[in-house]
Amino acid sequence: VLKALDKTAIRLRSKLGESLASVQEYATPLEEATTPSLDALQAYSQGAKTMVTKGDSAALPFFQRAVETGSEFCCGLRRHGGLL
Amino acid sequence: VSATQKLLRFGVFELNVDTEELSKSGIPVKLPPQPLRLLALLAGHASQVVTRDQIQKELWAGETFVDFDHGVNKCINQIRTALVDNADHPLYIETLPRRGYRFVAPVISKTILAPQPKIIESDSGERSRLPVLIGGRTKAATATAEVAAASLPVAVPDPITAADLATEVAPTQKARFRWSRAHLVWVGLAVLMVTAVGGGLYWRWRGHKVPALTDKDTVVLADFENKTGDPVFDDTLKQGLTIQLEQSPFLDLISQGKVNQTLKLMGRSAADLVTPEVAREVCQRTGSKAMITGLIANLGSQYVIGLEAVDCKTGTFWLKRRSRPVRRKPCSRR
Image 1 (cartoon, one colour):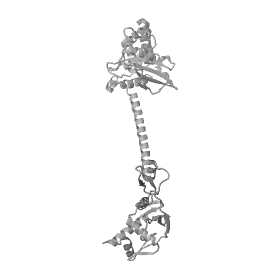
Image 2: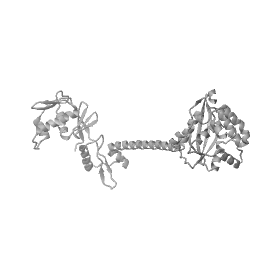
Image 3: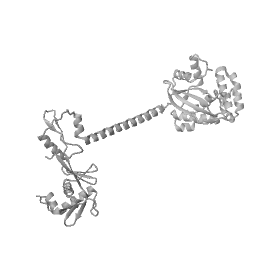
Image 4: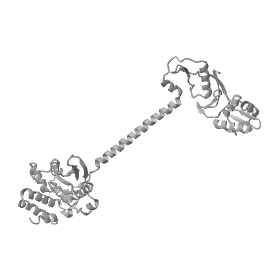
């Protein structure tokens, strides 16, 4: 599913006016940029949303689960490293 | 002026001696006047020998003709071509060396009444003449008609309109005109069809032409619509799409923080779903150019993802992109 989302999003970017060179250069697949695990990505998404609505402490369990589920979850580590 | 005309019929041919017309099965056959007269002479003396002297007296009488033999031969050749006849195995004209020719085919002679000329009253009050054109008449028939009209004017009982006149005067022209009109209608229809198809294609092309964004334009992302019933896709795909689109140095996504602020201004909670309707309002409030909506749905045993770019002001779709169906499998969650 993530691969399909990747491909569709990349096609959308080029159709919206982004140059082909730019699309090719800045299109790291989601599985590499985040995680191949949908569950991990879901946990991360929930954490990001909870952080905005309920605060950092409420979001922490979600980020922890994201990292546990997808150990290669670089974005979660990079963005919310301070929380973990 | 003769009121009758003499016809000579042989095979599929008919020769009108008076009007000097030859036809084959009713279809006129072109033949110059001199060969026509020679044919009339030969057919009029069917099965008899017509000598070259006789021909010279009948057709070249009083004329100084330096190469009579050549002239006769040429006429005979033209006649044979018109009749599709063969000198070696003649069906119609047999050559008798040094003597002359003999028309060997049986000939039926018939006399018919010459067609009556029509005379109508012209607008100027003078009598005017119509050439007799029944069946495609010749100058002889026309001359007959003219003479008859000049000497024996016959009033036409029914008034003839201009349309009647056109109908009777020039049937061939009328046929041409009809063909021409039909032709024009078809050409017109073809032009209309080409225009319609071209217009449709252009309209479709325009419809699919996406107004390019600039690097100053901002874009709002709506929540993904999850029609699969699987909660794993809730928020997940929007997060994935955000990460993919944020890699672009060209696209400028409105941040989640700004979206939340705008939602508050709209009297909504940050936890509210950003549906396409809500996203459009956020888009308009933030002065963004477009919004992107997403959808995931079941397609049999597969998933399909769709993305759409929508103009915030007009609500019209710029473009739609759909993924290939993705097989549902447990490992996809991994």
